[in-house]
Amino acid sequence: MKKTYLFSFEGFINEQRFIPEKKEHIEDYEKIYGPMPDDFKETDIYKQYVSKFKPLKRFKLIVPNELESDYDWELLEQLAAASFSSDYWLELSEDNTSYQLFLSVKSGGKQVVKKVEELWSFQINRLFEIYINEQINLFALMDDEDESDAVHAEQETKIKKYSLQTAGLTDDDHFFTELDEKLGEITKL
Image (cartoon, rainbow, N blue to C red; front, side):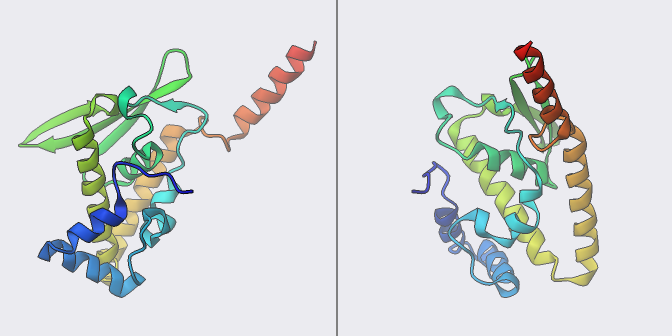
């Protein structure tokens, strides 16, 4: 059975269809990619772009304790990394078991930086809304040849930045596989 979270992509899309400007963006997206699925991870947005940001499974993202099981935190991290409208960075904890996700956005002409663990539920919901709307708009724009190249170039830049920032930290990196093997050999001695 699929996990239910406080942010519902299906519910969000249904609400957006009642806002003329948002409805137009969704319809533009659907003209190109077909009907919007109920699950964000089934969209072309996720499959073609957002999924390229592989979450750090080896480490635990530090989130608000009371909301730990209420959101798809991996998806939020992926959306933040994929976003053109905000910046982010990851910081490994001193004990190397967990990490912080910092989000940086401009608000009222000022740069605001927050750790994900400091956010309230309404702020987290709003981030999902902003990030998903942004991606819907960008994917709809990619139908325009003039915009498509610029969007693709920025996407590639974002993917490279994330890859560089997480280099050596993802499960698929050979470094950890080899290290685990060596540690296993040492503990057998």
